[in-house]
Length: 295
Image 1 (cartoon, rainbow, N blue to C red):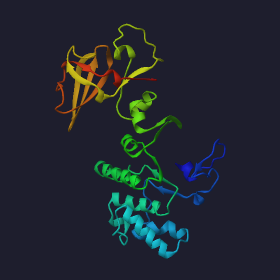
Image 2 (image 1 turned 180 degrees about the vertical axis):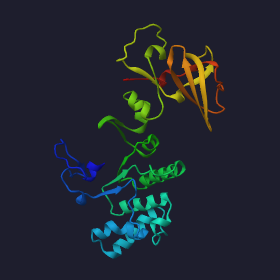
Image 3 (image 1 turned 60 degrees about the vertical axis):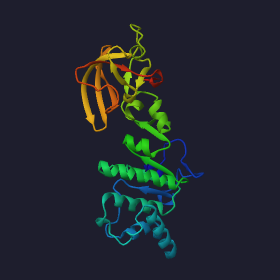
Image 4 (image 1 turned 120 degrees about the horizontal axis):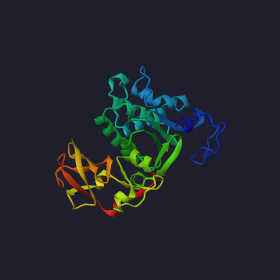
């Protein structure tokens, strides 16, 4: 993010940074037409909402008539059309974020950079603002948005292409569905949702076939598993815990064939066999739900 914005020099690095067909690798930050939404919003507390949003335009010496029109359009876009006279301290956290977003959009950037935009919000507000950002992107289909986040829900909901990094290197690039359904390895599988990683001889019932830890493992998502009466599924074991999350039950099962690491099952409440701690059960899954990946 800082490299794209121009805050980190490209000296010693290979490759180029190209935006809208222009090489920005060595262009200073103030000459890159980029919008940036800071994690802390960075609003000016002594300026009104209007003046905060207008700041970038005025810095570019935009005519006053155009400033008024473009600020009004930007505030309307983020559903704050009547808040131009309000001071930032009078706004909620979610509204402050929308002001910062309007300020980033009003300059009509080639790329909008979002730095952990939802991390400062509580869970309910986070979900609401996440939906607003998604809707905003759909209203601006020609705008490229780069969002940096450590939250898997943000990554899955907001993106149409997801780039997952590990220790500064690309772990996988693809659509959210590709990363979730066909992860490259165990790191990707566990980062985007919960994942059960089983030795192939356990998942496919190959008995005493020798297994090398460097070989691939079978990935089964918790929602792909279904609890059935003992003997009616491919895997067998005992339920060790049942956790209720409203409409969803999270069930841990210790398998006979893999006693050292519980398998996680997620199921909708009221669907299928209701689990009880200590019960002996089997787990059923479809063959298409198993993905072989690197450990």
